[in-house]
Length: 175
Image (cartoon, rainbow, N blue to C red; front, top):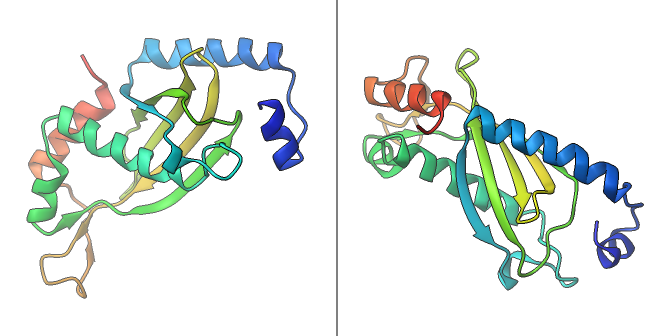
């Protein structure tokens, strides 16, 4: 963590040298295995009063990364929504490892894992321009059919063909 972020949150920093080495190895592994990438800059609206990225801002970036990856895999999320299909988050965990600050350039590296029952698991790493792992997120989605109206939500156990094809592409990673 940056010195001021440590003081602001009262946490003790991990040894930077050890953390950076560990993170670089993990980041190279992620890149080697194929991931969907989205680059963003921490803007003033993403930060708290101390200039540190607010924890809730990570959620918007996670959603943006998922929507963009789905589009790159050939299916626009807006097309799913127009058909009454949604992919709500049913589980979410974020491990914050290094504070992101106003102005930082960040790459989100997302991997989609094979479905587990009705769950579609995503793993995303927030990596700084220097290659340091700032945060890791685990998100599980499910497919919900709103075809009978917003009050008649139904968990869809089988994916429509176009979504199944897009998910297979997402799991495979970008080519």
